[in-house]
Image 1 (spheres, rainbow, N blue to C red):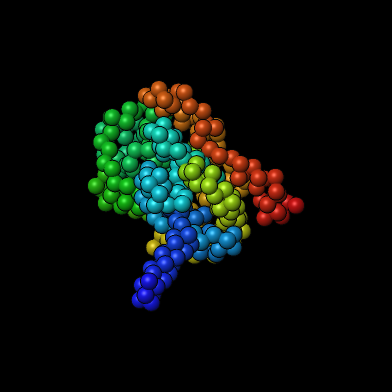
Image 2 (cartoon, rainbow, N blue to C red):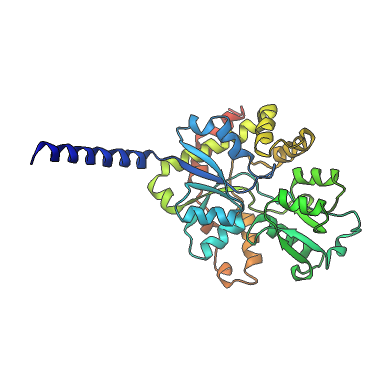
Length: 330
């Protein structure tokens, strides 16, 4: 072999080693699945306050509209983790996707049906046009549940799928649709835009797996230490939110593209109330969702809430006393 051959071989090997190193060190992503002021703040803070880095994570956030799409990207291997809601996790697993909830942020449905001022009662929603999210999202489930509470089958409204809360709100304020479903921040914007609250789902305090984080079981098997650090980092981000209001609202302003401070104050108060400190998922909420889905899907009737969660990391975190120390209880 001549010198030229060795030089070419060396360059090739160095190129291969460089590629391999980049592959090993490649940045991982966690998707937040709503740009609403009430849905993704823990992920935003974990990044902006440097909490992911503090826990040794090279983890960046990326926006994917809707937990169904987030979980699809997760299963495809494009993400390390995704935000989600319980309905999407259940549907993904029943369809063969091997994903699990690793931690939770909110365990109830903090939603409001708002609409034009001409709608005098919930019963008048029948036949009206609604701005809705894609099936399988929490907003979709909450809309169907709210309508069922007032005796209106979903088929008796004119549903227009528009996506996230900001888009649904704009369509309703502009009169393109008659009503929609939103959380606290968008509710306040809607009231300023002349809309009214028709149904307050938050008052019902329905157990529901709202904001939660999901990983594939393959990720959990192969890299449990990283998953553990993600769970602890998100718990710390929740604590940061609850104890550093002004800084948290600045982060919310950045990701909601400068929403009015008054609106964000209301969203902050709602988030403060609903964020769970120990980050345990709600098995009761998952069971209730399964009970509803079992009416139309026999696979749901055979499933158990425990099939959709992996609690080892929140269990370890509880035993360690980490959350109690964050909140000064120890």
